Length: 236
Image (cartoon, rainbow, N blue to C red; front, side, top):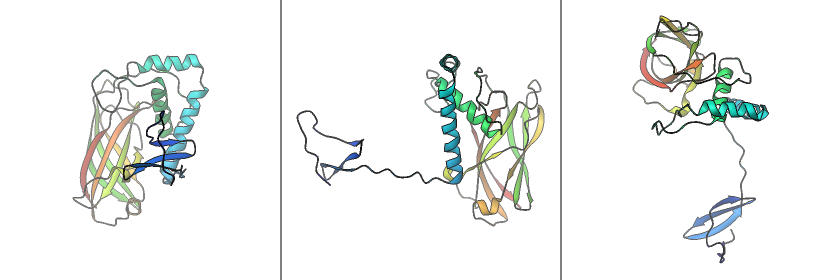
């Protein structure tokens, strides 16, 4: 752990560059060899990372003129993260990658074409009932879309975690589950199957707290809206 020696040009240092890392201890600056840890995510996280890398590679592969088209379309798209001040917008690459991920989730991975962002329609999703089919938990939600919306354009993607009754959510333990079919117009039902639900969270109970959130995936563009959260209990 050699101590860093200040000079006229550099009086202090922090961070990493090349094979060295500068860090502080007891008010003094030291250097050490930079570590290169291997990312040890879960199988699902590694798969998601691989999809993201393919999306970035696809962005680099499209013509520059097409990238400019994406940039122009993104000027009207606000970020899904704060601050929600109606002043910021995302980049064309962000919009492209969002569409790529959306189509992948829908089972239709491909290089998307530039399409304008359209506001998502008013909609409502409420838990209705639950049933067990072998090792799977089948959740039924009542859904509503305006009659003017074309049936089959949107599909629900949920993130779900099961806990003991009364326990709070832990976002890191939530998992993705795509609805079995696109949404209908007007009143309808959305079914979400949570496979191996007892083993997935190592809980074998007669009652569960279900924490989750959902988004709508636009099957035409691959885009998604801002998520909404839900929480309810089920007795089996």
